[in-house]
Image 1 (cartoon, one colour):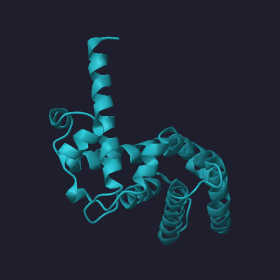
Image 2 (image 1 turned 120 degrees about the vertical axis):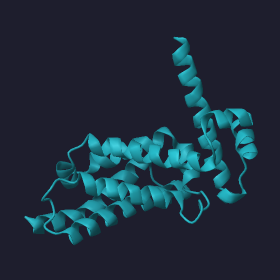
Image 3 (image 1 turned 135 degrees about the vertical axis):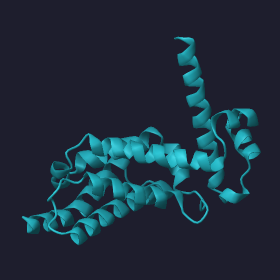
Image 4 (image 1 turned 180 degrees about the horizontal axis):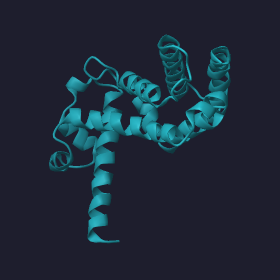
Length: 197
């Protein structure tokens, strides 16, 4: 491994520790009550390491939001939305894998206190809605209202489904949750799409 790769790896590890620490602190404290010192202690780093990576706490929040949205957006960019809206289980299973790969982080994330006036999950949900709307095939819906209503309904339902599962005792597997959301959300959408053609 080259020296540059070692440095990149160290930076990634420090950033991940900082982000995980902040999300953990946000499960029981509001953002305005969290200090850099607390984040550094929770992340097992010093304050200088924090400032080597971020200017302030809000930059950490923005990066968390962007990274999560980009992870979900990568999934959206690799699938044919028109086809997956009719048979969307693969889409849900891929999103489920993202959550499973970093279960503890997502579990803490859904329990975060408010970040300023906006909940982090709500910000991610709104950004995802906009990304999905921007990537939908042209002409899939006949009118803007039906498209916006459908996307808002699906993304909000999906995020609430994952949030509920992460907050409560796991009576079903995450795979079963994906299958249930697939059936619940998209059976209704297929009815709408059938009327559009």
